[in-house]
Image (cartoon, rainbow, N blue to C red; front, side):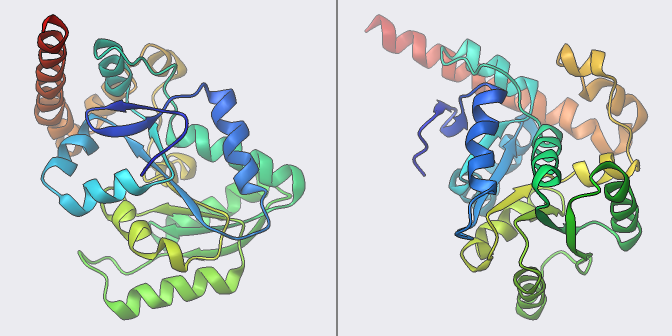
Length: 259
């Protein structure tokens, strides 16, 4: 998919805007009245590596209307490859900015994903943090590896009947991105965000790293220390594989320049 403000990094068209520029563009879509769903996905070294062995996931990422650099590894790679991206934009950044916009004008939102317990906490938090947002739907889909056609139709119907401006999907990658890609044309919302872990962050189920670690690009480190069993593959397998591909791309670029 061709995007206007992007740089190509390892065959992915990734958002090449400052946060201010990006959110000006995104919020114009959120505020639209035409209900022509546009959607956003995040990319980091781990999702890049997973997509190498999952063609459907790769297709979904490349089909998103916005693919944002959610990992510091993507930013560093862009600099090494001579196509520097201005700054990291996280799924939580997207969530906060869009929710503030909806709160300012009484927009509506639907949450799809996670557990009923987590969704209930999100509901309570929104009532406190964004009291003017119209929460029109919460749905925890069945926990299964693959949804049936009936499951998918039920989810789509619930979303469309709610008539939301924004749909947040938190089913973890790559499941959420592949689901959105498959049904995007059937969803009557302005914007859909695949934001995964943000559901748990906002509900307080998982603590985000401190602003200090976020700022220096090491947000992953405290989380790895706290959840080594769940996150070790990202650091010890995905990160080296991603770094290797970046190195090969840098060497190939240098060879091309010398010709």
